Structure formats: C-alpha cells, structure tokens
Amino acid sequence: MKTGELIANAYQLFEAASDDDHRWQLLNGQLSMFGVTSILFGMCCSVKEREIVGLTKSLIIRSNHPEEYFETFGADTLLDNDITAQALFDFQDNVIWSDENVWSNASPQERKQAEIECDLGLRVGVSISVHEIAGPAAGFGLNMANIRGEDFPQFFSENQAGIKGICYSYFEVCGKQRGKGVVTLTPRELDCIAFLAAGFGPDAIADKMGISYKTLEKHLANSRLKLGARTREQAIARAMSLNLISL
Image 1 (cartoon, rainbow, N blue to C red):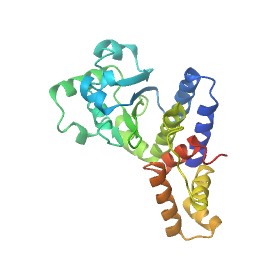
Image 2: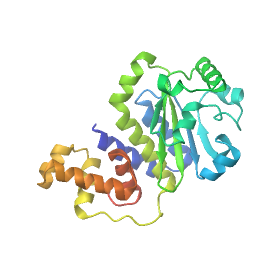
Image 3: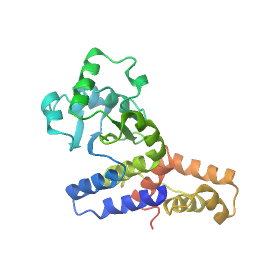
Image 4: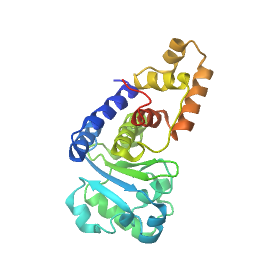
C-alpha cells in the first residue's frame, strides 16, 4: 500500500472509531505494522502553562508504556528530564532516541533518566512532534523494542512517512483542528492533495492533471502553507479533518 493510501485509510479508521478507547486501540494496531510495541501520546495546549508548571503537568497523556516507567519517574514528572520530549516541544520534528547529537548537551539528570529507560526496555524508538500554528502541540513517543538499535536509523528513514502520517491522522481526528477557521484551497490544490491521498505519486499526478512537475510542486507548497502543514503527509490528514477531501 502506498503512503497516501495508508494515511487516508488510517484517518478513516480513526474517524469511524466508536470512542476514544477504540481510537487508541486502532492507533496501536496501525503503528504495530511498523514494529511499534508501545506508545506515549502527550498533548500540550498552552505554551504558557508549560512554562509555569513544567512539561509533564502541562500535558494530556495517554500511554501503554510499561507500568514500571510511570512508577519510576512519577506521573507528575516523568518527562521533565526526558531530553527527547523536551526537544519535541521546542519544535524539533522528530528525535531518534539513540541519536548522539541529541545527547551532546544533556544534563546528568537527563542521561540518568535515559539509562533507566533503557533498563525498562525503552531503548530503541523515536519521538515525533505534531504542531499546529498558534495552536496545541503534541508528541508521540514510539517504542520499537524488537528492532536492533544499529538498524533503526535506516529503518526509520525508509518508513517515517507512513509512521508520521498515522500519527498526524490520529492527532487530527482527536478534534484539535476541526472547526478552527476556514481553509480554502483552489480546485487545483484540492486535486493535488486528493490524488496524494489516493496513493498516486508526484509524476503520476502531474500526468493526470496535465501539468509540469514544477507546477505540481507549487500547488502542493501552497496547499501545505494554507493548511499549516509541514509535510505532504500532514497536509493529507489535515485536509481530511477539515472535510476538504474524501475518498
């Protein structure tokens, strides 16, 4: 299945879920196809609140990480010394947990927490951010315990579009964007996003629309700007959440 189709199908599943618990189960099922064994989802709706009370207390958190993780670090402080979580809410797109660049300026407390997390089985994985312009921010911590650490960077590079697209779709369907303002795309821009969602690649879309690749890229760039999306995958999820496109 192509990435656009994968994202669109995930969005439809999340939207059709009977309740939040069902939607959470579906998220776990969708991401398990990429080797995800547990997830932490946190949403921060106020930067000011984060500044006042700290990262963990400012978040709405849902997770199926091991119970020992919460028992060890405490429900009110578990992310306060988590350098990857801090990086997400400082607007970094994604953080591979084993990336040495992340740890170059880590504090002793942050390194200690990371060591304990490794002992708890949270050794291999990635943290992914989702941000809205002037709106809430969210982060996903995806544990992939069954993938070898040395193989993970390449694995994520090859699969990140699908993984991130599923995360974006879950966030959108949770209702944080729906009803906020009106986004108007031109017919050409709508066609470009709709074709992406249907699984067509850029070359095929340009051919179907009778336009050059350069013109297609211009339409897609304009669409992302209007939707407040940083990637094509996020643009698909956001356009569907606003009922601008459907399958």
